[in-house]
Length: 494
Image (cartoon, rainbow, N blue to C red; front, side, top):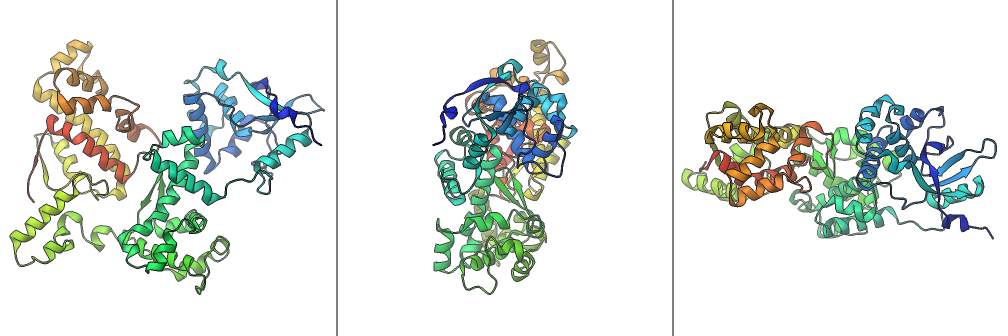
């Protein structure tokens, strides 16, 4: 019987003295791995890079937590210790300790992250020393092989669990990361595919499924792995116009056309007797045939295909359709429609047409009116502009209230040199009360989701977690009572 007692013993080893394993299956066998940058280039290529970045950030935020063993063995020929399991984690530690050894592609990121950690805290880590390479290899197989006696969850079982946690913690991905110890990249992938599956609940999809088809599509037994495989293919993303945005999906194509093709895809997956079989195998082998069998997704602008929400809502409302010969009734129906859209995170534009900004600031007025027009296909523009709008609104309030001299006196510098956070802190303490004051307090707290840090991230960061239509709409709704105090915003009938 094998002796596994070594798995119970952890030994401190210097990170700098540990060697990465050149035969690691994660590495490209056609590449040569001599320097640390060679390993980093391979382990941070393409989609793996975001996962590696999430790993580095988790070490910065929570420290190195040896929840999963770092398994090493000693090479008899040179006496060095090589990492059998945990190469990515050890690589992250090595580069945090010496970021200049990073490849050019990630050097800037690693230098910045390295400045946030005390290198002495990661000088040594606890490792499990396997007696021989054969013992280390056994552990690798047990840990990673699908045929391991340690039966892993199936893909869909893990997805169900993540879905339950997502509902339980109301979408708080930081909390889910703490519970699961999974990277943000892994969690985002799980949640995104669940959101794609949930498109079966969209009106345009549900109405075109039979009761039996909808029941099968909604069932926990639905083969979600097929959807996951299908929407991970670059050709599908391009032809269907879908992008990943953190935990969300961004449909760049005509939404109605997309949902029409999606409905046909669901029907074929469910129908075991379909003329063209769709499963995880045929998606790879017969992708062209499958795409040809499904409706073509149109990229015609939503405003052109269904007309702009702002200019054609009269024709999209039952109340308005029944009042085409009565302008007053039509206007009433339209205004009622916009009232119902208030605080709706799924609305198509950040600002509803019923709001008007009275200001002599050309830029504030221009941005406010643009928010009524820009669709969420330009989500990065909307996000960055929201941060700019807040800055301009605070500046205008300072000018209107004639308190610039007060700020200069308090902070001993010109207004231009006073950052937005300090401007907000000043007006919170001296000019605001009630709800607007509470909003600024939350805005200045980096631990809250509606924080100035998140807004700054739209300009300076590459994170996508908060870059969704629903979140941006909710952020605007959160800030709106503050904007009503800072600016002259009125609600008027269209």
